[in-house]
Length: 122
Image 1 (tube, rainbow, N blue to C red):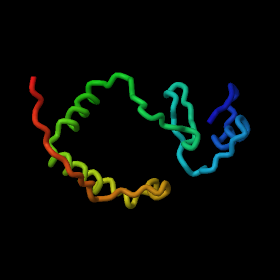
Image 2: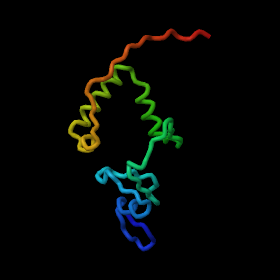
Image 3: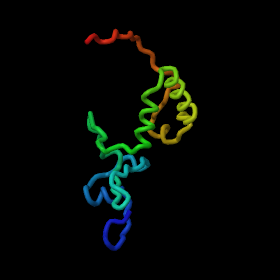
Image 4: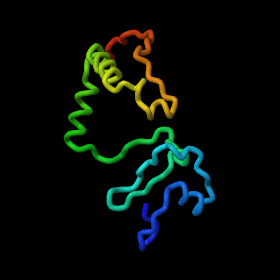
């Protein structure tokens, strides 16, 4: 990526080593683009942390709201079918990135004991 006004190119590995004295251990991992399209900012995954309870505070557009409602308003059997269909379709077992990160996706859903609560009385 360009690092100055002259357009000098450096790899993320070189930039972090020279600028911060940080040696990236997982050079094969993709970077996260945390900037915007006009001013991209690339960070190695190993320097990023997901903060517990972090929220996405930007407003959803109409298409995103429609998709969110469609997914969250499903009956349990429909949701189960969609999840299993997605797992089969995405073939995570053959995904090179999943293999690289040691991620394994089970084709069996977790089962938990539960009960239906009575409706609240007002």
